[in-house]
Image (tube, rainbow, N blue to C red; front, side, top):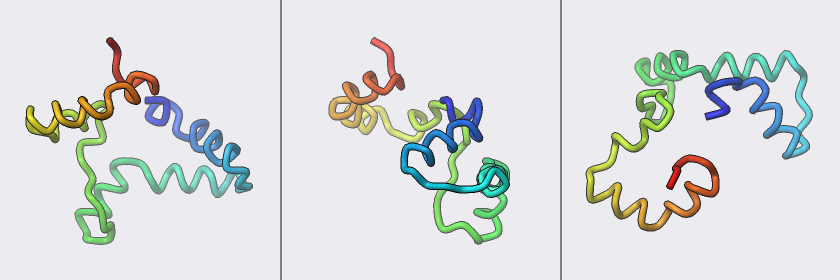
Amino acid sequence: EDMQIDPLRELKRVLDFLNWKVSDLELEAAVEASRFDRMKMKQDRGAFLGHIRSGEVGGWKENYSPQELEAFLSIASDALMDLGYMRT
């Protein structure tokens, strides 16, 4: 995913789209604070109220049973293909 390859550039694109103005320093701090290893450390300390999986691109597929994956893909496969997450 583009966010994995260049998180600073991609976050800037999102913020530009939303017309949110932040300094370069704030942007860099946000990217640094949200690195996978940092988020995982926060979760392990109980300071993050969420679930951090593997941090691997495409890792979401490994969290579903075959039946769940089939049900999900029957609903979402067109959108996933349109967004470039799946190929035919």
